[in-house]
Image 1 (cartoon, rainbow, N blue to C red):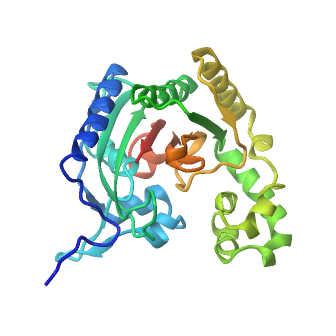
Image 2: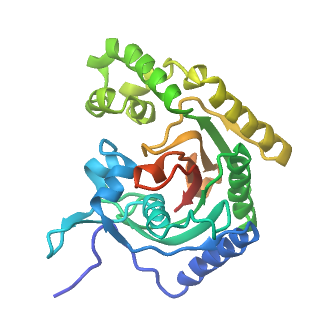
Length: 310
């Protein structure tokens, strides 16, 4: 009988593994220069940790989780991303205590799991490298962390990059924009894709992220979330862009960009490679701010910012 690896996985063989080691060691060196320390969490978590953090209506939770009930009838999932497990660890281990440096800065690397159709750049077991900063609401943290991500890629010799940013604002921004977006899309509901029809009433911002051509023609004329930012949210985003300018980091603003995780607030970003070998506009890093995630998991009010690549 011939056995093969499970669909959506790969073997990292000698000759290739050395490249992975170089990538991981470069990440460690760069992140430690910015005072980040390594953290390691289990590859499986309680289902509720991910569902409560990422959002019940997201594709990750509704379609892509590897979840099961163990022999003790506990609902378990293989981790689909890194931020929620680390936020859980931050709360469980009381890393917000007075004995810990503020802000609390960690990085991680390891396998993640999502049940999706395997294709180029998408596997069911994939590897992520990421960072999280807990305890700073300062927009300087947003700018400095994005600059660090760009620095990491420069250390790898990658220069054909685009940093694209947006703001999702605060809770008031989201509430006002959500209604404006629904009001705009409802007259076109019959023409939307089936996924977007479902998202329209569950999580309308996700319609903006649709790759379906039926949706994209409406997304192009959708109201801009930047027009709905509260004064506080606008001030935060203006400071982020001012600091990126001061750091000499080039960026573009894309008001239609959203992230597929419900915990994001204020600044979000993607780094895209324009290198031909990576494919057209390949997103190689993404992240943003999450000011309420720690509270969702039972911790104190703690703003955060992070990113992941992989």
